[in-house]
Image 1 (spheres, rainbow over the protein chains, first blue to last red):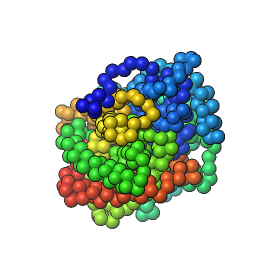
Image 2 (image 1 turned 135 degrees about the vertical axis):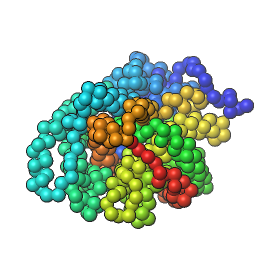
Image 3 (image 1 turned 180 degrees about the horizontal axis):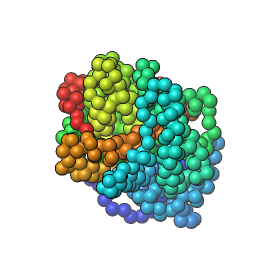
Image 4 (image 1 turned 45 degrees about the horizontal axis):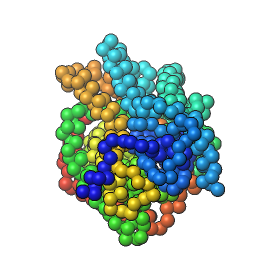
Length: 82
Length: 468
Protein backbone atom coordinates (compact mmCIF):
# COMPACT_ATOMS: atom_id res chain seq x y z
CA UNK A 1 0.00 0.00 0.00
CA UNK A 2 1.19 3.48 -0.86
CA UNK A 3 0.68 4.73 2.67
CA UNK A 4 3.01 2.10 4.15
CA UNK A 5 5.64 2.83 1.49
CA UNK A 6 5.67 6.40 2.75
CA UNK A 7 6.52 5.50 6.35
CA UNK A 8 10.19 5.70 7.21
CA UNK A 9 11.34 3.49 10.07
CA UNK A 10 15.08 4.04 9.85
CA UNK A 11 17.27 6.66 8.30
CA UNK A 12 19.82 6.75 5.48
CA UNK A 13 21.40 9.31 3.23
CA UNK A 14 21.94 13.03 3.60
CA UNK A 15 19.18 15.09 5.15
CA UNK A 16 18.28 18.74 5.33
CA UNK A 17 20.13 18.89 8.64
CA UNK A 18 23.43 18.83 6.73
CA UNK A 19 22.22 21.03 3.87
CA UNK A 20 23.54 24.52 3.28
CA UNK A 21 20.02 25.77 2.49
CA UNK A 22 18.61 24.63 5.83
CA UNK A 23 18.46 26.68 9.01
CA UNK A 24 16.87 25.57 12.26
CA UNK A 25 18.60 27.52 14.98
CA UNK A 26 15.76 28.01 17.51
CA UNK A 27 16.76 31.61 18.19
CA UNK A 28 16.61 32.38 14.48
CA UNK A 29 13.24 30.67 14.10
CA UNK A 30 11.94 32.80 16.98
CA UNK A 31 13.29 35.87 15.25
CA UNK A 32 11.81 35.01 11.86
CA UNK A 33 8.46 33.95 13.28
CA UNK A 34 7.64 36.93 15.47
CA UNK A 35 4.87 36.03 17.88
CA UNK A 36 6.03 32.43 18.25
CA UNK A 37 7.39 33.12 21.74
CA UNK A 38 4.13 34.64 22.96
CA UNK A 39 2.51 31.24 23.28
CA UNK A 40 5.16 28.73 22.27
CA UNK A 41 8.91 28.55 21.84
CA UNK A 42 11.66 27.83 19.37
CA UNK A 43 13.13 25.52 22.00
CA UNK A 44 9.99 23.40 22.48
CA UNK A 45 10.09 19.64 21.95
CA UNK A 46 7.11 19.80 19.59
CA UNK A 47 9.27 21.73 17.14
CA UNK A 48 11.77 18.88 17.07
CA UNK A 49 14.56 19.92 14.67
CA UNK A 50 12.36 21.63 12.08
CA UNK A 51 13.65 24.62 10.22
CA UNK A 52 13.49 26.76 7.13
CA UNK A 53 14.66 25.72 3.69
CA UNK A 54 15.91 28.88 2.06
CA UNK A 55 15.92 27.23 -1.34
CA UNK A 56 12.31 26.02 -1.44
CA UNK A 57 11.03 28.62 1.06
CA UNK A 58 9.29 25.99 3.14
CA UNK A 59 9.33 25.03 6.81
CA UNK A 60 10.16 21.37 7.24
CA UNK A 61 11.85 18.67 9.27
CA UNK A 62 15.63 18.44 9.47
CA UNK A 63 15.19 14.76 8.63
CA UNK A 64 13.77 15.50 5.19
CA UNK A 65 15.82 15.46 2.01
CA UNK A 66 15.53 16.57 -1.59
CA UNK A 67 17.44 16.53 -4.89
CA UNK A 68 18.69 20.07 -4.23
CA UNK A 69 20.74 18.93 -1.27
CA UNK A 70 24.05 20.77 -0.98
CA UNK A 71 26.32 19.73 1.85
CA UNK A 72 27.57 22.33 4.28
CA UNK A 73 31.29 23.00 4.06
CA UNK A 74 31.72 22.56 7.79
CA UNK A 75 29.96 20.50 10.40
CA UNK A 76 27.61 23.20 11.54
CA UNK A 77 24.22 21.88 12.49
CA UNK A 78 21.48 23.93 13.94
CA UNK A 79 19.39 21.38 15.74
CA UNK A 80 19.25 18.34 17.89
CA UNK A 81 18.09 14.81 17.65
CA UNK A 82 15.40 14.67 20.25
CA UNK B 1 15.24 41.62 0.96
CA UNK B 2 13.90 40.34 4.22
CA UNK B 3 14.73 36.80 3.22
CA UNK B 4 18.30 37.73 2.32
CA UNK B 5 18.81 39.41 5.67
CA UNK B 6 17.46 36.41 7.47
CA UNK B 7 19.76 34.11 5.56
CA UNK B 8 22.82 36.07 6.57
CA UNK B 9 21.72 36.19 10.18
CA UNK B 10 20.98 32.52 10.28
CA UNK B 11 24.35 31.56 8.91
CA UNK B 12 25.95 33.53 11.71
CA UNK B 13 23.59 32.18 14.31
CA UNK B 14 24.19 28.64 13.15
CA UNK B 15 27.84 28.87 14.16
CA UNK B 16 26.90 29.89 17.68
CA UNK B 17 24.64 26.90 18.09
CA UNK B 18 26.47 24.20 20.02
CA UNK B 19 26.24 21.19 17.73
CA UNK B 20 25.61 17.80 19.24
CA UNK B 21 24.20 19.19 22.48
CA UNK B 22 22.07 16.53 24.11
CA UNK B 23 18.33 17.08 23.67
CA UNK B 24 18.07 16.67 27.43
CA UNK B 25 19.92 19.98 27.74
CA UNK B 26 18.76 21.73 24.58
CA UNK B 27 14.99 21.72 24.91
CA UNK B 28 12.97 23.80 27.34
CA UNK B 29 10.69 20.81 27.94
CA UNK B 30 13.48 18.76 29.46
CA UNK B 31 14.74 21.68 31.50
CA UNK B 32 11.25 22.12 32.93
CA UNK B 33 11.39 18.46 33.94
CA UNK B 34 14.83 18.75 35.58
CA UNK B 35 13.98 21.97 37.41
CA UNK B 36 10.51 20.87 38.49
CA UNK B 37 11.51 17.43 39.73
CA UNK B 38 14.66 18.88 41.31
CA UNK B 39 12.54 21.33 43.32
CA UNK B 40 10.15 18.57 44.40
CA UNK B 41 12.98 16.26 45.46
CA UNK B 42 14.68 19.09 47.35
CA UNK B 43 11.39 19.93 49.05
CA UNK B 44 11.02 16.29 50.06
CA UNK B 45 14.57 16.10 51.45
CA UNK B 46 13.89 19.17 53.59
CA UNK B 47 10.58 17.66 54.67
CA UNK B 48 12.23 14.38 55.68
CA UNK B 49 14.77 16.28 57.76
CA UNK B 50 11.94 17.95 59.65
CA UNK B 51 12.33 21.24 57.82
CA UNK B 52 10.77 22.84 54.74
CA UNK B 53 11.64 24.96 51.74
CA UNK B 54 8.82 27.29 52.76
CA UNK B 55 11.29 29.99 53.88
CA UNK B 56 12.49 30.57 50.34
CA UNK B 57 9.16 29.71 48.67
CA UNK B 58 7.77 32.95 49.98
CA UNK B 59 4.27 34.09 49.06
CA UNK B 60 2.52 37.29 50.08
CA UNK B 61 -0.10 36.98 52.79
CA UNK B 62 -3.50 38.63 52.63
CA UNK B 63 -3.43 42.33 53.46
CA UNK B 64 -5.99 45.07 53.72
CA UNK B 65 -4.08 48.28 54.49
CA UNK B 66 -0.82 49.71 53.22
CA UNK B 67 0.64 49.71 56.70
CA UNK B 68 -0.11 46.00 56.99
CA UNK B 69 1.58 45.44 53.68
CA UNK B 70 4.58 47.50 54.75
CA UNK B 71 4.99 45.48 57.92
CA UNK B 72 4.68 42.26 55.97
CA UNK B 73 7.28 43.28 53.39
CA UNK B 74 9.74 44.56 55.97
CA UNK B 75 9.84 41.11 57.56
CA UNK B 76 9.91 39.11 54.31
CA UNK B 77 12.04 41.26 52.02
CA UNK B 78 15.12 39.12 52.48
CA UNK B 79 13.12 36.03 51.54
CA UNK B 80 11.97 37.65 48.31
CA UNK B 81 15.58 38.53 47.53
CA UNK B 82 16.65 34.96 48.24
CA UNK B 83 13.91 33.64 45.98
CA UNK B 84 14.96 36.02 43.22
CA UNK B 85 18.55 34.84 43.64
CA UNK B 86 17.53 31.18 43.44
CA UNK B 87 15.38 31.69 40.33
CA UNK B 88 18.12 33.78 38.74
CA UNK B 89 20.74 31.08 39.23
CA UNK B 90 18.51 28.29 37.96
CA UNK B 91 17.05 30.11 34.96
CA UNK B 92 20.38 31.66 33.95
CA UNK B 93 21.90 28.18 33.79
CA UNK B 94 18.97 26.94 31.71
CA UNK B 95 18.89 29.84 29.28
CA UNK B 96 22.67 29.71 28.90
CA UNK B 97 22.39 26.11 27.76
CA UNK B 98 19.78 27.03 25.16
CA UNK B 99 22.01 29.77 23.83
CA UNK B 100 20.99 33.01 25.53
CA UNK B 101 23.44 35.44 27.02
CA UNK B 102 23.29 35.88 30.82
CA UNK B 103 23.97 39.61 30.49
CA UNK B 104 20.64 39.92 28.63
CA UNK B 105 18.72 37.37 30.66
CA UNK B 106 19.63 38.58 34.15
CA UNK B 107 18.31 42.16 33.94
CA UNK B 108 15.30 40.94 32.01
CA UNK B 109 14.41 38.35 34.61
CA UNK B 110 14.86 40.85 37.45
CA UNK B 111 12.33 43.01 35.61
CA UNK B 112 9.93 40.04 35.29
CA UNK B 113 10.38 39.06 38.94
CA UNK B 114 9.82 42.61 40.19
CA UNK B 115 6.61 43.05 38.24
CA UNK B 116 5.44 39.55 39.21
CA UNK B 117 6.01 40.35 42.88
CA UNK B 118 3.87 43.47 42.58
CA UNK B 119 1.14 41.49 40.79
CA UNK B 120 1.28 38.64 43.35
CA UNK B 121 1.04 41.14 46.21
CA UNK B 122 -1.80 43.02 44.53
CA UNK B 123 -3.70 39.75 44.10
CA UNK B 124 -3.57 39.26 47.88
CA UNK B 125 -5.19 42.59 48.64
CA UNK B 126 -8.50 41.76 50.32
CA UNK B 127 -10.32 44.06 47.88
CA UNK B 128 -8.68 42.61 44.77
CA UNK B 129 -11.65 40.52 43.65
CA UNK B 130 -13.95 43.51 44.12
CA UNK B 131 -12.00 45.30 41.40
CA UNK B 132 -11.48 42.15 39.28
CA UNK B 133 -7.74 42.24 39.94
CA UNK B 134 -7.15 38.53 39.39
CA UNK B 135 -3.35 38.17 39.18
CA UNK B 136 -3.24 36.27 35.84
CA UNK B 137 -5.35 38.92 34.13
CA UNK B 138 -3.45 41.77 35.75
CA UNK B 139 -0.16 40.19 34.62
CA UNK B 140 -1.42 39.79 31.07
CA UNK B 141 -2.88 43.29 30.78
CA UNK B 142 0.17 44.90 32.34
CA UNK B 143 2.45 43.01 29.96
CA UNK B 144 0.33 43.95 26.95
CA UNK B 145 0.35 47.62 27.91
CA UNK B 146 4.10 47.67 28.47
CA UNK B 147 4.92 45.91 25.19
CA UNK B 148 2.34 47.62 22.97
CA UNK B 149 2.04 51.11 24.43
CA UNK B 150 5.31 51.82 26.18
CA UNK B 151 7.60 49.46 24.28
CA UNK B 152 10.71 47.66 25.45
CA UNK B 153 14.12 47.07 23.86
CA UNK B 154 14.24 43.77 21.99
CA UNK B 155 17.13 42.38 24.04
CA UNK B 156 14.88 42.28 27.10
CA UNK B 157 12.96 39.43 25.46
CA UNK B 158 15.68 37.12 26.79
CA UNK B 159 13.82 36.79 30.08
CA UNK B 160 10.29 36.53 28.68
CA UNK B 161 10.34 32.71 28.32
CA UNK B 162 6.59 31.99 28.39
CA UNK B 163 7.00 28.30 27.63
CA UNK B 164 9.81 27.56 30.05
CA UNK B 165 7.92 29.13 32.94
CA UNK B 166 4.58 27.54 32.10
CA UNK B 167 6.10 24.08 31.66
CA UNK B 168 7.94 24.38 34.96
CA UNK B 169 4.66 25.44 36.57
CA UNK B 170 2.84 22.46 35.07
CA UNK B 171 5.48 20.02 36.37
CA UNK B 172 5.09 21.57 39.83
CA UNK B 173 1.32 21.38 39.41
CA UNK B 174 1.74 17.63 38.96
CA UNK B 175 2.99 17.48 42.54
CA UNK B 176 -0.37 18.74 43.77
CA UNK B 177 -2.47 16.29 41.75
CA UNK B 178 -2.95 12.75 43.06
CA UNK B 179 -1.92 10.23 40.44
CA UNK B 180 -5.16 8.42 41.16
CA UNK B 181 -6.98 11.51 39.85
CA UNK B 182 -5.05 11.32 36.59
CA UNK B 183 -5.94 7.63 36.28
CA UNK B 184 -9.58 8.35 37.19
CA UNK B 185 -10.13 11.41 35.03
CA UNK B 186 -7.57 10.82 32.29
CA UNK B 187 -9.77 8.64 30.07
CA UNK B 188 -12.66 11.13 30.26
CA UNK B 189 -10.25 13.97 29.52
CA UNK B 190 -8.90 12.12 26.49
CA UNK B 191 -12.39 11.24 25.24
CA UNK B 192 -13.74 14.77 25.65
CA UNK B 193 -10.66 16.46 24.21
CA UNK B 194 -10.45 14.04 21.30
CA UNK B 195 -14.05 14.65 20.24
CA UNK B 196 -13.57 18.41 20.32
CA UNK B 197 -10.13 18.30 18.69
CA UNK B 198 -11.23 16.17 15.76
CA UNK B 199 -14.43 18.14 15.13
CA UNK B 200 -12.62 21.49 15.43
CA UNK B 201 -9.80 20.38 13.14
CA UNK B 202 -12.17 19.12 10.49
CA UNK B 203 -14.24 22.31 10.68
CA UNK B 204 -11.25 24.58 10.18
CA UNK B 205 -9.69 22.33 7.55
CA UNK B 206 -12.75 21.97 5.37
CA UNK B 207 -13.85 25.61 5.68
CA UNK B 208 -10.31 26.61 4.72
CA UNK B 209 -10.35 24.25 1.74
CA UNK B 210 -13.78 25.50 0.72
CA UNK B 211 -12.37 29.02 0.73
CA UNK B 212 -9.58 27.89 -1.55
CA UNK B 213 -6.70 27.73 0.92
CA UNK B 214 -3.84 25.30 0.43
CA UNK B 215 -4.00 21.87 2.13
CA UNK B 216 -0.96 22.61 4.24
CA UNK B 217 -2.11 26.00 5.47
CA UNK B 218 -5.51 24.47 6.24
CA UNK B 219 -3.80 21.76 8.32
CA UNK B 220 -1.57 24.26 10.14
CA UNK B 221 -4.62 26.38 11.00
CA UNK B 222 -6.65 23.32 12.01
CA UNK B 223 -3.96 22.03 14.35
CA UNK B 224 -3.62 25.45 15.97
CA UNK B 225 -7.32 25.60 16.73
CA UNK B 226 -7.78 21.96 17.65
CA UNK B 227 -4.71 20.70 19.49
CA UNK B 228 -2.43 23.08 21.35
CA UNK B 229 -2.34 26.43 19.66
CA UNK B 230 0.88 27.87 18.33
CA UNK B 231 2.88 24.80 19.35
CA UNK B 232 0.61 22.52 17.33
CA UNK B 233 0.68 24.84 14.34
CA UNK B 234 4.45 24.97 14.24
CA UNK B 235 4.75 21.21 14.79
CA UNK B 236 2.32 20.37 11.99
CA UNK B 237 3.90 22.99 9.73
CA UNK B 238 7.19 21.12 9.99
CA UNK B 239 5.52 17.75 9.54
CA UNK B 240 3.59 18.68 6.38
CA UNK B 241 6.31 20.96 4.95
CA UNK B 242 4.27 24.11 5.02
CA UNK B 243 5.18 27.22 3.11
CA UNK B 244 7.43 29.58 5.02
CA UNK B 245 4.64 32.14 5.35
CA UNK B 246 2.03 29.69 6.73
CA UNK B 247 3.06 29.49 10.42
CA UNK B 248 2.87 33.27 11.04
CA UNK B 249 -0.74 33.25 9.84
CA UNK B 250 -1.64 30.57 12.36
CA UNK B 251 0.39 32.31 15.08
CA UNK B 252 -1.54 35.55 14.57
CA UNK B 253 -4.93 33.85 14.70
CA UNK B 254 -4.13 31.69 17.71
CA UNK B 255 -2.71 34.62 19.68
CA UNK B 256 -5.69 36.82 18.75
CA UNK B 257 -8.33 34.32 19.86
CA UNK B 258 -6.36 32.99 22.82
CA UNK B 259 -6.08 36.46 24.33
CA UNK B 260 -9.79 37.11 23.83
CA UNK B 261 -10.59 33.77 25.51
CA UNK B 262 -8.33 34.46 28.48
CA UNK B 263 -10.84 37.13 29.42
CA UNK B 264 -14.03 35.77 27.86
CA UNK B 265 -14.10 32.17 29.15
CA UNK B 266 -13.71 33.08 32.86
CA UNK B 267 -16.23 35.89 32.40
CA UNK B 268 -18.87 33.63 30.85
CA UNK B 269 -18.13 30.87 33.37
CA UNK B 270 -18.59 33.40 36.15
CA UNK B 271 -21.87 34.61 34.70
CA UNK B 272 -23.12 31.02 34.51
CA UNK B 273 -21.79 30.25 38.02
CA UNK B 274 -20.01 27.14 36.80
CA UNK B 275 -18.20 25.15 39.51
CA UNK B 276 -14.45 25.74 39.25
CA UNK B 277 -13.75 22.18 38.09
CA UNK B 278 -16.30 22.53 35.30
CA UNK B 279 -15.08 25.96 34.27
CA UNK B 280 -11.51 24.64 34.19
CA UNK B 281 -12.58 21.73 31.97
CA UNK B 282 -14.31 24.07 29.54
CA UNK B 283 -11.28 26.34 29.41
CA UNK B 284 -9.04 23.29 28.89
CA UNK B 285 -11.22 22.18 26.01
CA UNK B 286 -11.67 25.52 24.28
CA UNK B 287 -8.52 27.58 24.94
CA UNK B 288 -5.61 27.10 22.59
CA UNK B 289 -2.19 27.58 24.14
CA UNK B 290 -1.20 26.08 27.52
CA UNK B 291 -0.10 29.36 29.06
CA UNK B 292 -3.17 31.26 27.87
CA UNK B 293 -5.49 28.57 29.19
CA UNK B 294 -3.75 28.39 32.53
CA UNK B 295 -4.11 32.16 32.89
CA UNK B 296 -7.85 31.79 32.30
CA UNK B 297 -8.20 28.72 34.55
CA UNK B 298 -6.22 30.21 37.42
CA UNK B 299 -8.14 33.43 37.09
CA UNK B 300 -11.46 31.60 37.27
CA UNK B 301 -10.33 29.32 40.10
CA UNK B 302 -9.34 32.41 42.06
CA UNK B 303 -12.99 33.46 42.16
CA UNK B 304 -13.99 30.46 44.27
CA UNK B 305 -15.03 31.16 47.83
CA UNK B 306 -15.59 34.87 47.27
CA UNK B 307 -19.35 34.92 47.62
CA UNK B 308 -19.87 34.99 43.88
CA UNK B 309 -21.89 31.80 43.79
CA UNK B 310 -18.99 29.80 42.36
CA UNK B 311 -18.48 26.45 44.06
CA UNK B 312 -15.28 24.43 44.21
CA UNK B 313 -11.69 25.37 44.87
CA UNK B 314 -9.01 27.22 42.93
CA UNK B 315 -7.02 24.00 42.52
CA UNK B 316 -10.00 22.19 40.99
CA UNK B 317 -10.02 24.64 38.09
CA UNK B 318 -6.32 24.07 37.50
CA UNK B 319 -6.64 20.30 37.86
CA UNK B 320 -9.47 19.82 35.39
CA UNK B 321 -7.92 22.33 33.00
CA UNK B 322 -4.59 20.52 33.06
CA UNK B 323 -6.12 17.09 32.67
CA UNK B 324 -8.06 18.13 29.58
CA UNK B 325 -5.37 20.31 28.04
CA UNK B 326 -2.22 18.35 28.81
CA UNK B 327 -3.45 14.75 28.98
CA UNK B 328 -6.37 15.16 26.58
CA UNK B 329 -4.79 17.37 23.92
CA UNK B 330 -1.08 18.18 24.18
CA UNK B 331 0.28 14.63 24.32
CA UNK B 332 -1.28 13.75 20.97
CA UNK B 333 0.60 16.33 18.92
CA UNK B 334 3.08 13.71 17.69
CA UNK B 335 0.24 11.53 16.41
CA UNK B 336 -1.43 14.48 14.70
CA UNK B 337 1.85 15.45 13.07
CA UNK B 338 2.57 11.92 11.90
CA UNK B 339 -0.90 11.34 10.45
CA UNK B 340 -1.00 14.70 8.71
CA UNK B 341 2.50 14.19 7.33
CA UNK B 342 1.42 10.83 5.91
CA UNK B 343 -1.66 12.38 4.34
CA UNK B 344 0.49 15.18 2.95
CA UNK B 345 2.82 12.87 1.05
CA UNK B 346 0.23 10.32 -0.02
CA UNK B 347 -2.95 12.28 -0.70
CA UNK B 348 -2.15 15.96 -1.16
CA UNK B 349 0.11 17.23 -3.87
CA UNK B 350 3.70 16.14 -3.35
CA UNK B 351 6.06 18.88 -2.24
CA UNK B 352 9.50 19.66 -3.58
CA UNK B 353 11.04 17.24 -1.13
CA UNK B 354 10.95 13.48 -1.59
CA UNK B 355 11.54 12.24 1.93
CA UNK B 356 9.35 9.70 3.66
CA UNK B 357 7.55 10.24 6.92
CA UNK B 358 9.55 9.09 9.95
CA UNK B 359 7.40 7.31 12.50
CA UNK B 360 9.83 8.50 15.17
CA UNK B 361 8.30 11.96 15.14
CA UNK B 362 5.54 10.67 17.40
CA UNK B 363 8.19 10.67 20.12
CA UNK B 364 10.40 13.48 18.82
CA UNK B 365 7.49 15.92 18.96
CA UNK B 366 6.10 14.59 22.22
CA UNK B 367 5.90 17.46 24.76
CA UNK B 368 8.41 16.03 27.23
CA UNK B 369 7.36 18.24 30.13
CA UNK B 370 4.33 15.96 30.44
CA UNK B 371 6.72 13.26 31.68
CA UNK B 372 7.77 15.58 34.49
CA UNK B 373 4.13 16.35 35.27
CA UNK B 374 3.30 12.64 35.59
CA UNK B 375 6.44 11.75 37.58
CA UNK B 376 5.78 14.67 39.95
CA UNK B 377 2.26 13.39 40.51
CA UNK B 378 3.47 9.85 41.17
CA UNK B 379 6.19 11.07 43.54
CA UNK B 380 3.91 13.12 45.76
CA UNK B 381 1.17 10.50 45.66
CA UNK B 382 3.66 7.97 47.02
CA UNK B 383 4.94 10.46 49.61
CA UNK B 384 1.46 11.41 50.78
CA UNK B 385 0.21 7.81 50.80
CA UNK B 386 -0.03 6.44 54.31
CA UNK B 387 -0.68 9.77 56.01
CA UNK B 388 -3.98 10.27 57.74
CA UNK B 389 -5.99 13.29 56.64
CA UNK B 390 -5.11 14.99 59.93
CA UNK B 391 -1.39 14.37 59.43
CA UNK B 392 -1.61 15.51 55.87
CA UNK B 393 -3.27 18.81 56.78
CA UNK B 394 -1.02 19.39 59.80
CA UNK B 395 2.35 18.22 58.47
CA UNK B 396 2.55 17.38 54.80
CA UNK B 397 0.54 20.22 53.33
CA UNK B 398 2.26 23.18 55.03
CA UNK B 399 5.78 21.76 54.88
CA UNK B 400 5.75 20.10 51.45
CA UNK B 401 2.76 20.88 49.24
CA UNK B 402 2.22 24.58 50.12
CA UNK B 403 5.77 25.71 49.20
CA UNK B 404 5.61 23.79 45.92
CA UNK B 405 2.26 25.45 45.22
CA UNK B 406 3.80 28.83 45.96
CA UNK B 407 6.68 28.24 43.53
CA UNK B 408 4.15 27.04 40.96
CA UNK B 409 2.23 30.30 41.31
CA UNK B 410 5.45 32.26 40.80
CA UNK B 411 6.26 30.30 37.63
CA UNK B 412 2.75 30.83 36.27
CA UNK B 413 2.88 34.55 37.03
CA UNK B 414 6.22 34.87 35.18
CA UNK B 415 4.56 33.14 32.24
CA UNK B 416 1.35 35.19 32.19
CA UNK B 417 3.33 38.40 32.38
CA UNK B 418 5.64 37.18 29.62
CA UNK B 419 2.65 36.46 27.35
CA UNK B 420 1.76 40.13 27.52
CA UNK B 421 5.35 41.27 27.19
CA UNK B 422 5.95 39.19 24.05
CA UNK B 423 2.61 39.84 22.34
CA UNK B 424 3.29 42.82 20.11
CA UNK B 425 0.20 43.18 17.97
CA UNK B 426 1.90 45.28 15.32
CA UNK B 427 4.45 42.50 14.74
CA UNK B 428 1.86 39.80 14.13
CA UNK B 429 1.37 38.85 10.49
CA UNK B 430 -1.76 39.93 8.72
CA UNK B 431 -3.65 36.64 8.58
CA UNK B 432 -5.99 37.61 5.77
CA UNK B 433 -9.75 37.22 5.66
CA UNK B 434 -9.98 33.62 4.46
CA UNK B 435 -7.75 32.12 7.18
CA UNK B 436 -9.57 34.30 9.71
CA UNK B 437 -12.98 32.99 8.61
CA UNK B 438 -11.82 29.37 8.61
CA UNK B 439 -10.16 29.61 12.01
CA UNK B 440 -13.07 31.50 13.53
CA UNK B 441 -15.51 28.84 12.31
CA UNK B 442 -13.46 26.30 14.26
CA UNK B 443 -13.36 28.57 17.29
CA UNK B 444 -17.17 28.81 17.35
CA UNK B 445 -17.63 25.05 17.01
CA UNK B 446 -14.93 24.43 19.60
CA UNK B 447 -16.37 26.72 22.24
CA UNK B 448 -19.96 25.44 21.85
CA UNK B 449 -19.00 21.77 21.75
CA UNK B 450 -16.55 22.33 24.58
CA UNK B 451 -19.31 23.84 26.70
CA UNK B 452 -21.74 21.00 25.98
CA UNK B 453 -19.21 18.31 26.87
CA UNK B 454 -17.70 20.10 29.89
CA UNK B 455 -20.96 21.28 31.45
CA UNK B 456 -23.82 19.13 30.20
CA UNK B 457 -22.27 15.73 29.46
CA UNK B 458 -19.34 15.48 31.89
CA UNK B 459 -20.15 18.36 34.26
CA UNK B 460 -20.75 16.12 37.27
CA UNK B 461 -17.40 14.51 36.62
CA UNK B 462 -15.38 17.72 36.51
CA UNK B 463 -17.19 19.23 39.50
CA UNK B 464 -15.94 16.31 41.59
CA UNK B 465 -12.23 16.57 40.81
CA UNK B 466 -10.19 16.10 43.99
CA UNK B 467 -6.73 17.58 44.53
CA UNK B 468 -4.12 17.18 47.31
